[in-house]
Length: 362
Ligand code: SAH
Image 1 (cartoon, rainbow, N blue to C red):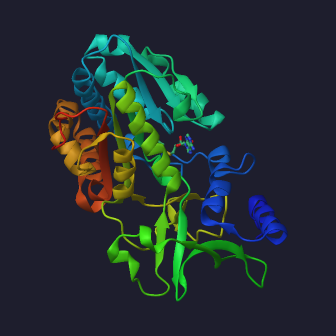
Image 2 (image 1 turned 90 degrees about the vertical axis):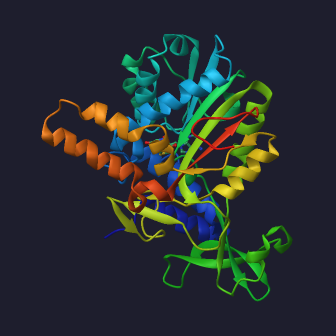
């Protein structure tokens, strides 16, 4: 088999310029203008490499729609606000959210819809999906480009696609892990000379065994801080949903998924989806730095059950044939059961103001 085009270009680039950081490698694999994963592949749905929660069932987006209605009231039901989604994929979550929120026509009337999406191909699909929603989306490349104003924001499986850095514990300290080439000319991990400042690490990570890997996510943290600062300035709430861990920990979480199977992360650059687990502790501290109120995260299972997943499933299945009811039951399991998406996925809510926020505890 011949190596992919992107792989060959990366090997040539490393030979000319030296090894690259894991963050640079992730960026090249996902966002390369010619051969990046999001530019060339259809990642979502049953034909894609993975299925996200909104693609599992309409109930996911509908319950987030119900959440948005309460968050809108908490904001004082303004006559105009920005409804923002970052990384909307096929636009399914937003379409389901808007259908559920149409229970309150003033919500739809007040909503100025913004989708933050870098892929021109996905923007077209999102426009199409939202055709019957009654709202026309505006697009932005970055959250900073969305005009100011009170904001309700959602992001599902967005942060896991942002570049991370990895560091590996060596006797002389934490060295940045790099992607270089091996003696046989293929891609291979190695260690560079850049070091992570040990003083910034939580005590339980400072004395790790040699060979331990630690990840940092400066790109994700910067976006969380930007969102938080915006909510503090303009009012509003953000719901950040992703898979990841609640407490900073060590370990290598970089993974490649290709045709619904785990793949070696260096084998098929641009042809596999590359993600890393999100460190919610770091995301929450970044939001606190932005001055926002951060609610203790819930697991996706808790979040959906508290919002009435079982009741919604019952209503959706009522009067339907047995097979349709079974599919709904399967979807509930997939979204909320601990051994499926229920526990690995976390939901972080951040808000520009204090005060309670259903279904989160203070
Ligand atoms: N939220 C969707 C899709 C998640 S995949 C779902 O749940 O189904 C990640 C999405 O983020 C894709 O739409 C991808 O094109 C977009 N994306 C990736 N990097 C981005 C960036 N830096 N800025 C904006 N969007 C980005």
